Image 1 (tube, rainbow, N blue to C red):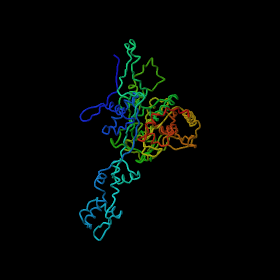
Image 2: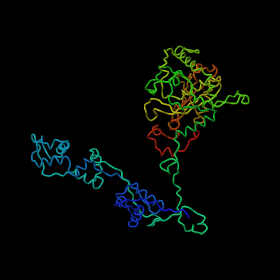
Image 3: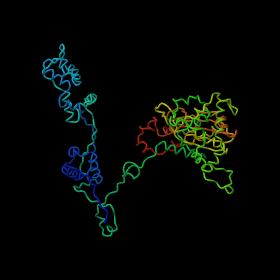
Image 4: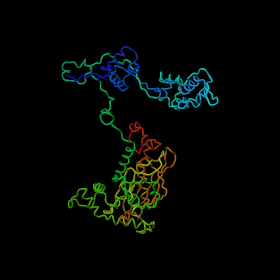
Length: 550
């Protein structure tokens, strides 16, 4: 037997019984050309009404329009005024009845009466006569009460300007109300038709399919993944993720490997000291860096097993003859590499470089403290991971290329272009006898891949690179040259302390992920890209980008 179905009934409870709301709507539409559901079904919740209308509209039996408006509702104080009169009216009425009412009378002792006195004076209903109040008129028009009674009856004021005044006085509030007006649809029928959902062999054999009422396909229905309920949306990639993937493809095409960057919290040693940032540097102040209070400090520098294992999976030893030495698993290779590293010696080298000078450098010549190097911070740059990876490279020095794209944290004032967290794109290239000219040539090639053909370089200062360069390019939208990145060659004091050969040099360069994303998607305020102000419709509707295309 073929599958059949009608509309799923929406029950309507009344007087202890139960009715089918869809049938009630069909009956009302049959009797009236237009059916305002709020008037015909005043006690039925709006969501039930809409569910029934949607089921009928999906079969084109009815059509409906949606109307939403703000209704005025009286507060408890407003309701009391509508029922009993305004504060000023009550004061005037008490004075009128007494003829002369003492200012010390208990009738005037409550807060309502004190408020009413002021308004009654302004309206010239009463005046002060010695130590008493007297009436100035025999009758008054209580406008406040009349206007609130009108609002109570009509759910609105005659003069819309009154809403602001009465809301400010906390006598009324507003509530958004959604109502519907239903009418007959193209396939109107007073009774719910039975629809066939399956085409069977029997129907084809006996010809009944020719007259069967098949349920139409709803090609606008959402998928079954994610979203609300069973029929929710399938989700969408955030613009930052789209641009991030484009950058990853560029890096991979240029022979880079991706560094593991899961450590949001790092020690002061890896985040600052290993990068030759002095312990008195302003970047380490509380106003620039987020420090972690629990746990209060890290242990001494050492290996990270999870990071080492991931790096071991990427390592390729070109000198290894796999026929003679079958490759071990990544965890074993990671342990073999770690065994070649002396973290204590590395720490001592970093201390010496800072405090006394070493490897040809005079250092910063200040008392180096262990407490500062063990402080835990939310990493301020992914270069902390680069330092760890480069130190690991000293176990097997060789040319290599690494990159990372991940979140970093700065204690900055939030505005249209700055957040307390953002994403940093970073690349490092290690090779023998590298030069500054080679770095400039590489950067031109890299930025050409993201659609920036003409670069300008400006000398700059970074604690861990020397020489250092800021990278600028022409911005068509802003019609001026803007900074797009930073770069340099890692200092010998930093690399030699790790145990790397003197002729193995390293390029470093970086930029934010947010700036190119904002440029590509035409976003002027970074808070529209990240945070609670993000428009989900914008997230879902924007396509992926090609950084090398306009």
